[in-house]
Every structure is written in structure tokens, then in C-alpha cells.
Amino acid sequence: MRIPRPRHRWNLSPSAAVRLQERLAGQVRVEPLGRAVEVVAGADMAFSPDGRRCVAAVVVYDLRRDAIVEEAVAWRDARFPYVPGLLSFREAPAVLAAARKLRTVPDAFLFDAQGLAHPRRFGLAAHAGVLLDMPAIGCAKSRLCGTHDEPPYRAGGHVPLIHRGECIGAVLRTRDGVRPVYVSVGHRVTLDDAIDVVLACVRGFRLPEPARRAHILAERCRTNPPPDSRA
Image 1 (cartoon, rainbow, N blue to C red):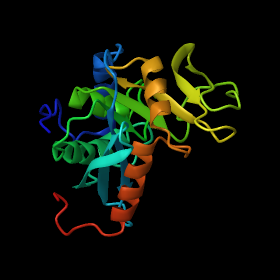
Image 2: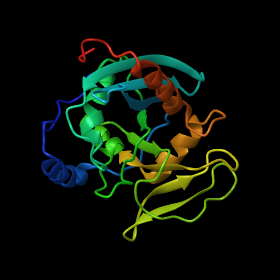
Image 3: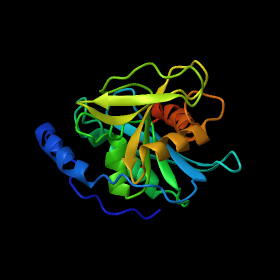
């Protein structure tokens, strides 16, 4: 899959990374998808046991056939320190490398990460979405910032996630009574689109199937990194 060249360097200081986030956050586009989403690429990341390498797994899932059509994995050295709120600088290089290996162009990317539901409105789903210039959705297992009421018990129920007086996402129940997920815009979708895509991807588990499969693949790979981190 052809993707645009990165718009910035990755070897930044944390303070420079914060400034870059603040600048690039203005490039996130919240706009309707405008087409049916039938093929979704789920993406998740994991780190080698020593924490020095990041592996990104991308699983392309066809919702019509309920089938995986392609998988891609890429390793990169973790060159940026672990700083909450700046994790995309550790993880995005591997994600982009894995996406570049895909032969299939998905209708949307679904990240186990935050999009606008981030203190500077630029989590990994937004960062990768802007660099890929593709529709991107954040569907995280936990909250990074904001407050919310308890979502309705039934699957599909959701409530707004609010931070500094702004709705930054939705707290969504994907199955009756299970813990909710945190859905937010990454790039080139609306929040309603993001919720609809996540629910369309649910296949009996709390996590949407493309992201769940990507998590399984990343965890399977993390304990066996290749000698060459460019693999």
C-alpha cells in the first residue's frame, strides 16, 4: 500500500513532540465517510520483553465475508522514551511500516488507541490517520482523559466523553453489560461514523474483530523479535 512520506522526523525531544502534536492536531479532519465501510484494517502494537522494540500488527478484515483477507507485521526500534501522551512517537513508525506492506487498501483503519480523546487531541489514531491520510478510528480499552456517565447496559448504548467542556469521543458498550470501549475520531470520519464502524465490527467479543485479531497477532509476535528490527 502506498502511503505518503512522513511529514516530520521521529527523533524529537518530548517538548518538541508536544509542540508537533499541537501543530498537527489542526490537520485532523472530522468529515463524513461518504461510503459504506466493508474492509477494515485493525492495528495494534506490542513491545519486546526488553521494551526496546515495537511490533505493529495490522489485520485486514472483510466484514461482508467475516474473514481475514490479509495480515502484516513490522518491527521498529523504540527510539522515543515512554512518555504518557506521546506514545505515538514510540509506536507510529512500526504502524506505518506495517501498513506499507499491505496489498489491500482498507476503507478505514481501526486502532486500539486514542484519536481526539487525548489531552492535545492527537493520539495515535489521529497521528497515524493524518500521516496515512486515511479514515482512522480510535477504539481504546481504557480512558486517557475526560469524564463520562455510565453508558446504558445494552450493546450499542453510549454516552459522550467530555474533556474541558468538549465532546472528544464516546463511551460505547459493545456487548450487554461488558466494560465499555472509548471511541474517538482519528481522521476523516465523524464520531457517529466511528461508533457505527466499531459496532459493525463486533463479533461476539468486547473488542471489534479487526482490532482484536491485530492484538492477538501482535502478542504472538512480541516474544520473538527478529534480529533485524527493520523486518
